[in-house]
Amino acid sequence: MELISLAKNPVPSGPVVGAFDGYDGKPMRYAVWQATRGPRRGTICLFQGRGEFIEKYFETIADLRGRGFAVATCDWRGQGGSHRVLKEAMKGHIKNFTEYEKDLFRFMKDIVLPDCPPPYFAMAHSMGGNILLRHAVKPGSWFDRMILTAPMLAFADERIGYPQNLARAYAETLAIAGMSNSYSYRDPNQAESTEKFEGNPITTDRERWSRNRAVLEVAPQLGLGPPTIGWLKAAFRSNATITNPDFAANVKIPVMMFAAGKDTIVSTRAIEDFATRLKVGNLVLIPGCQHEILQERDVFRQRFWAAFDAYLGVSKLAA
Image (cartoon, rainbow, N blue to C red):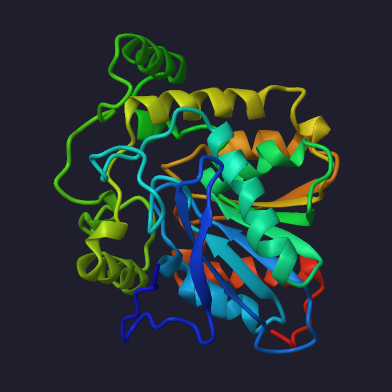
């Protein structure tokens, strides 16, 4: 297991990189960094969205370390440098989101708790936010607080192209018909995130978009194509669980959620509705921002970091 370093995307100094055993013994790539400034504030456990990889977050990791946080992160099952579920490695597949939860448990028990300083905070994007919210209603959480950017609670209508109920029925029916391992909408020859910048749905920042594409050009094995029917079915089921009206009331961990005003990947309305039902949480809407808030232009990232610093009590001097 190694990290890919580029001139415009260097590996932050001093990483500990390796693999831990997922819930079924399959290798999962992880990396840990210590803080670069004091006062020491604990550990941010950083969790990606679907199709992402550790290298995409080097800039964010440096930002966190400069605020006094150690950082622990890993590639989810089926993506990045972790075990690929299917022989066709570009297929983004999972049977059930409980698999992600079980890998989260192993990551925390084997990597974070033994060697990373408390307190622990979860920071997750998109699909990662979905997984962490599933964890947030379980007893005995390790996390004092959660910060979620554009959490995947429902898909945006623009992304699906069909009514949500119809799209879910489509996924369920095809899975029953034995097509769970098939691509949900096309068979690509390249990772989704290497498509053209113009009209892309994730960021308006050309430089950061180009930087992430450059990583995949050097290390295409980190990329991921569209999800399978099986992943889509599992995602719809997990979304339905979280958006159940009773779910949010059972979230006991304080949660700060960030929604992107121009998100066409996940539903901003679903995030807003969920936030109103949280007993210990709040929402920051960033107008004009696309889905990947931490990969966006500085004007949007600065709004994120200002809210983050206030939420976790980071002084301006430390930041």
